[in-house]
Length: 178
Image (cartoon, rainbow, N blue to C red; front, side):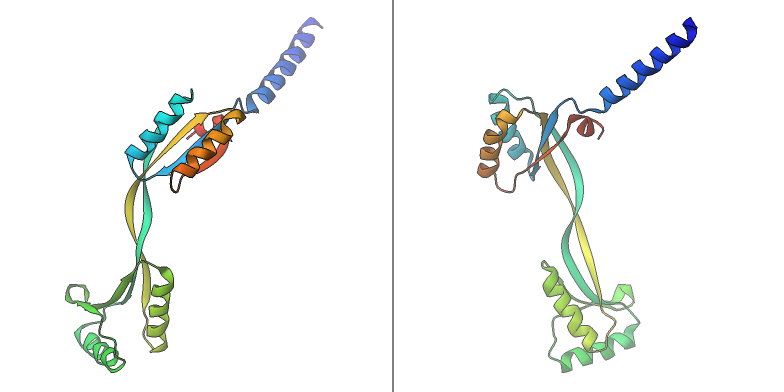
């Protein structure tokens, strides 16, 4: 019976260890997003002065740059016919790409609402217009660190002093897993 007691004791210890390991050791803060390394470094210096130990991270992210409205290329004669129709409606802002089967570009827009307005106008005219998101790569920087609640006010002050800075709270284990 001695072997049975030892096995059940081991199972109990293992179950307790698994439960303990699932609890987060600490809350961590993420301060993001900085468009420039220098901005992240400046905030990092302030945090170090407060006695905290931030880790600086960076990552390239794909972000929407603008929105492109165009008519797919369907040959030279089709593009000539479309241009005549556009001119008849006083639309003169277009560009024809002869290298892409005469695709007709009708503008790029920073704001989605303006691109959608152009798209709707073209579709009302009977065209199979396309709206496409165009992307660019932007390097983003952020800081992460374990921190106690007593620092929340100072972190909020830093956020108010730093445009577009956001603060998230997560468990340190989930941050370490990334």
